[in-house]
Amino acid sequence: MDIILIVIAIAVVAVLAAGGLVVGSRRRKQPPAPPPSPGPRPPAEPQVGDEAGEPSDEKRRTIEEVGLPGEGTAAAGTAVAEPPAPEAPPEPEVPAPAAGRLVRLRARLARSQNSLGKGLLGLLSREHLDEDTWEEIEDTLLTADVGVQPTQELVERLRERVKVLGTRTPEELRALLREELLTLVGTEADRTVHTDESVGPEGAEVPGIVLVVGVNGTGKTTTTGKLARVLVADGKSVVLGAADTFRAAAADQLQTWGERVGARTVRGPEGGDPASVAYDAVKEAIDEGADAALIDTAGRLHTKTGLMDELGKVKRVVEKHGPVGEVLLVLDATTGQNGLVQARVFAEVVDITGLVLTKLDGTAKGGIVIAVQRELGVPVKLVGLGEGADDLAPFEPEAFVDALVGD
Image 1: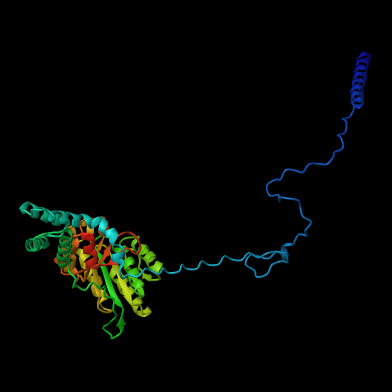
Image 2: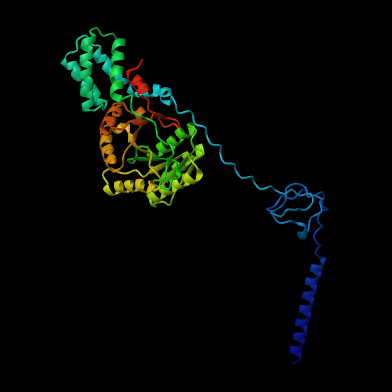
């Protein structure tokens, strides 16, 4: 028993001695050297949200002193941002006068039509005009879409006059050909686009009403916009009716044309009733005291009876306001004889009063002017000679024939 107590006492003394050694060693361990005193610190890198530049000593405002956007007052020393001024509408363009426009565009017309005049003059200048030569003259005229009946008439008259003339100088032949072509084109027809005011059913004055009709792709909407420029150039005020509700871009296109000359465009919902839009356009023209109302109708395929009947409905609805002064049929001059087929069908649905030939500068078949007039018995009143805004010109027979035969 005594031995056990002695062993325990020795173990306790050993443990206490070991703990003292550990504590002593820890106490003898030197603390780390203090860091060197800092010198001037470099500026810290800016962080997200920090302001650039040196902090200012300006007194900061409290939340009560900060005005809200849109309030009329602000704390002293702060600038109030002015709202942007609304954009002013563009000034309407002043189109060039329409009178004499075809003369100014004669060179452009001559470039496409010169082959007809040169071909005829070359054949007529041959020393011997035998039957083969006259057949070539006929072929030249038919190729230019003059038409069978007008070609036969022209060849017969040329035969007689050349026989009487005897000698044929280039100047005499040119004068002869010019005279005969003018006879075919016609110089007596009324080629004015009638936009005179009329009297409606209730005795009120009604602006001149113009319906623009034609097949898809002939340039009908563009022609309507250009016609507005022609009328504005003549000092008339115009209201446009976007009755082509089946083509999504038609109303936008027409409105753009109208805005350029200060003409308002009346339009309806896409796919809406064209007759309703046409009716509203004429009503607006009456209320505004405008001189003319131009109605752009949907491009109708002449083979679709239902759509053609709808065109007749548009005309009947518009006539509730007053008589329609003009029904202009737009034809693509490059389609040639196919344009005559279209013209016949349109003439059966509405009474065509005038023709507009577009893209006449893009074809050598200027004889379509003669053929379509002969087919319908109505004159060509306007011709398109390019894609420019003022390239729609009143048709002048003399300038047209001069472009054919050259100087």
